[in-house]
Length: 481
Length: 120
Image 1 (cartoon, chains in turn red, yellow):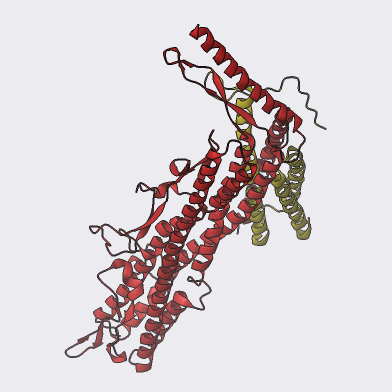
Image 2 (spheres, rainbow over the protein chains, first blue to last red):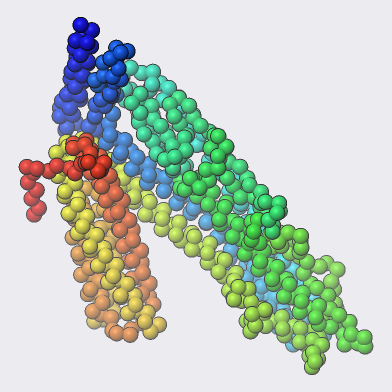
């Protein structure tokens, strides 16, 4: 008797569930032309089947969810996260570019050029105190230019770290809000459109900061995972992220190098590699890749320090190998530049002219043989256009090396600007797509997809043809230039 | 062909690619079809431009403008791909909603039986 009753209960439950599903379908049909309406789907949940325990199996009606809304919203958020990344890159690279003057009217290239000019003038009048003092003054200007650039970069790196702190705080605040909304959603008997709008708005804000996926659960809550993997919000709980400076390994070549940044999950796991885009992704990339390229890290001195050290060493070596007077006995030259020799990542920031060096102590005589009275200034002025690999830095002159550093920043800004422009379009497109897919019947969607597929193929072929044509045209125009 | 005319053809191509980008932002099938027409006109523009270039001619200014065209093409390509990604994803969801899953676990293809699609 109980088995028959169980079967009847199970059948009645299933009928009830399917009735609700039919209601949802009818609702979809009735609202097919309603602006802003999104088709909804009735979730059917399998029930436990265990006759011994009186569990009759069958299905029950779960929450009604809007697959289309979720998908379209996620598509908008995916573009927004890339837009947030592009915006941050434009801001940061614009700031960095101001530190790397390429006009030759200020900063390192200006001071370097002046120093080469003063070496050349000293070569013409090797015993002139004025010419020697001009070398000391120009060398001081160059050292100051290195210091200013390095200090500016270090300050920018510090600001970047502060921004990472602030961004993580923003992310955690939004995650907390979402957990609160989830709590309300789970306690509501029926879906609340107002609450749904608040959740979507908060997810939209969050997408500016970090890459994540959001999925609606049958209890009405939304689960948020950073990069689709690391829990940020589950149910009514938010899992706060943390940022942490990472100092180099004490056993590394540069243990006192500036720290990089790590992002940690709430359980302390390092999830830096999961933070790939959004404002936080851009900031972390700057902290861990861009700044270390110039200022160094545990293993590398950084391009700015490498250039400062190599230039200072070249000049000091030439001066100390020369003689101030040929005697007898000959008087050896003294080094001009000083820097922190204990920390390879601190050279540019500490580069200075030894204040005890006077004009008369600059060695002009190359002892030879044969002895050349202006051999040292001639060798130093030749650094502007190096003839031997010893006077080069990574196969380039000092001016060229500086140019490559500045070009990398300029290229970064250029890429960021292009990316920003494209992402603004892509976000507008995603918003248009969201608008288009809402309020269309399933049959109409099938037709739209077919239309799209044909239009996509035509556009794709035309873009390929245009790309090839334009490449050939560039080759025609530059073949002999 | 005079240099000004060659440059003018390139300008036409660039403005058509920009128009295609604007249409691709709309991302509806109708605007995608319209963008095809714009891109066809851009192909004509570049082809006409090439007729005005002598073999071995070096023109850094014109080359720079063609490079700008290529940047705009990348913009168009990016928008086309993002729209395609959206529609592909939606087709998978639609297939699942209407036909469930195949034996291999993939979303069922979207059934379009009985549909007549006309294109003018």
